[in-house]
Image 1: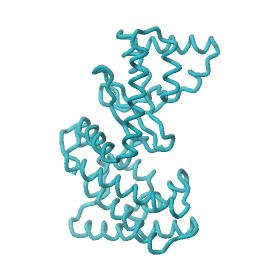
Image 2 (image 1 turned 30 degrees about the vertical axis):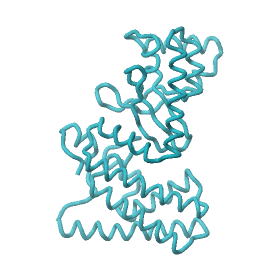
Image 3 (image 1 turned 60 degrees about the vertical axis):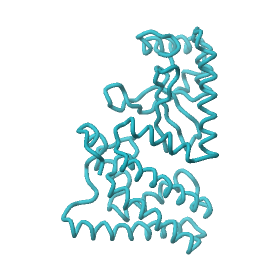
Image 4 (image 1 turned 90 degrees about the vertical axis):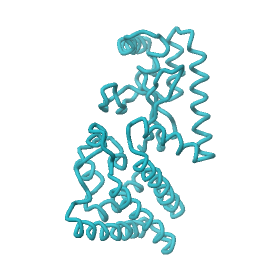
Length: 277
């Protein structure tokens, strides 16, 4: 699941949120929502009691609640109960609060913002830049990251045109590109950086991002020229695009004597107040 992490505000209270491109919906931290609605210092206890109550009543809502990693107050990523907008509306019905109706209007506004971003992608970039700045990333790195999103979108649009299916086929082709330029599969790359569910690109240096963009942009251009008709042909082109960037990586390493693909991740830089460069 490709995710865009954001901090949403309701009456100046923070609500941790995740946008899923795969599901095309927002997921919200339930304890953050409860904190806003009940205004006490024990939202986790309230949610635990409410879950038990809903289970006893035979409600399906609590059974469908999932978990995603969200940043906690200590800066660490922790598994957190999350709900989509529909689930939240149903949960709110079970929470006596004078803020229930304003919160529903707020949720509707959040949904409207996402539709606006789809119609005008520049709005999405502006909000994403704000999110990265809040996390402590440098402006130079953020500009590079936003460009990488644009390059990735051009590639996935090309894959769509060639009949590549979202999900597993996207993942396979991405893996081919990544292996060809970095020498590691996506899973190996994430392990190399000590990542789990975190976004790999959010933990790349500027140079890693540039080479990843080169690999994806080259794949896009080759695909436009070759016009592959089968998944096997798309896979071959993905490897070709990645190999071109891989050759560039090897030349850089030969000249600098340093490995481009490193073990550092975002926390290594941000914890030490260094730029991801």
